[in-house]
Amino acid sequence: MASITRNFKNIKALVSQDEMVTNYNNMLNKVTNMIEKQGPIYSVWISFQVGINNPIIFNTASTDLKQNLIAELTVEKNGAGVANSFILKVNYDPFNHGQNPSDKIEALDALVAEILSYDFGEDVDPNKQLRGYIQYGYNYTEDENLISPKYQFIITKASSVVQWSSGMTVYTFEGVSEVAPSCNIEASFEAVENRNLISLVKDTLYYYYGDPDNPPYGIEQGRETISGDTKYLIDVTEEMERDAPEITWNAVNKASPMQYCETVLKDQMSKSDKEKLEQKYEETGEEIKTYEKPRYIIYLTDTDGNKTIHIAYINPTDTENNLKIDYKFSWNLQSKNIVLEWNPETDLFFYLVQQYQINYENRMYEQKLKTATDNENKEEITKEYESKMGTLSDQAFEMYNATLTIVGIPADPPLASEVQIIPRILESTSRTQGVYMINGCTDNITTKGAYSSQLKVTRVRSL
Image 1: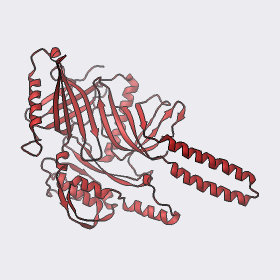
Image 2 (image 1 turned 90 degrees about the vertical axis):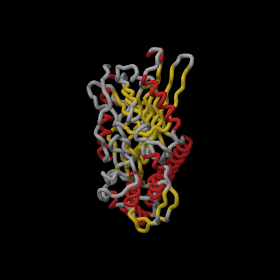
Image 3 (image 1 turned 90 degrees about the horizontal axis):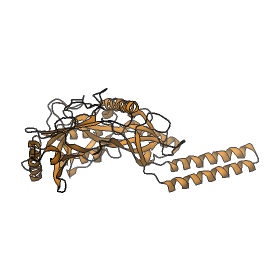
Image 4 (image 1 turned 180 degrees about the vertical axis):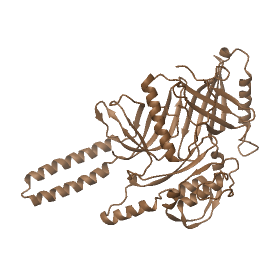
């Protein structure tokens, strides 16, 4: 395939999670059509910039061999903890570029030495020396927008290794979200009483990490922050805040603001969902199961110019209102397939034991029906059987983590959104089919140019 000459490109930054769902669906379909049209042969593109004042730029689309040195990239979108991260490797072969090192490589050596000398928190200006930008995707002549947003990171580690037998030098850069250094700060938080949960979290995130020029819903323009140059947008909706519970929380001394927010969100659910579950308990006596519990999630997107902290919510039993990815991941029965691997962390022993119990109850039910003397006895036997089967079905539900590896998708999946995964083995559908929640994503571009995305998912219910 012909290569496209390109530099960093400004892709529309998406803050709304509904827009992220639409964009991810579109990108899934675009990549699927590309693979369907030209087969598994594709060309990837990566561009990486280190520094602001005297930037060093690498670009795999460049015809300049001194720029076209990138070999490998991993970008991890965690969705948990405090930051996304990346690892990038640059290979320099002196025999391919001539014996004299280029200005770019000398600058790279100087930058590695400079980064190694830094101690975070002391005389470091991340806006100049340690800021990095990454963008990647496909060289596809029919659609030049098959590329990721331009991500912005802080470089946290750099190293170089020389292979003396060949003269090859491998430079490795590692970095995290710009919010990461700020997450290491410790703060004290006052006790709150009957405070709206989302309002509390929103105010905390805004004060420590927010952008005063772009405040979230419910916060006046120019309100004070201590975010400095971090300046993340806060993605929260009026509807989410209106439906959030009132909480009372003790004072907390010396905690990370991000950890504080994640702690107060843990095990909480919206007012409407809590009312529904309480009503269900009054009517049936059934308590909510672990895998059915609604939850709030905080995650980051690092798009340059619109870095955002998102607050998401999911109710595993709600089939209508959760964010949904329309694309159905399956294989063997469709010509368009982008799935590369499916690795569920299942317990086959547990499954076999449950299946044995279910088969045993089926046999006992059939025998009792044969020996029943009248219809009344048969009704009682059927009620008892249905009650046992309902209990066994609940116990047999397997909630587990899994990894779905697909052809690379250069877009941010909205975390806490639902996807349908229907694994097939030959002509049979696997028991691991179901609705899964996206917990995180890792994009990998290997030294051979293979591009894949690993979706970390958790099963929330069967189809």
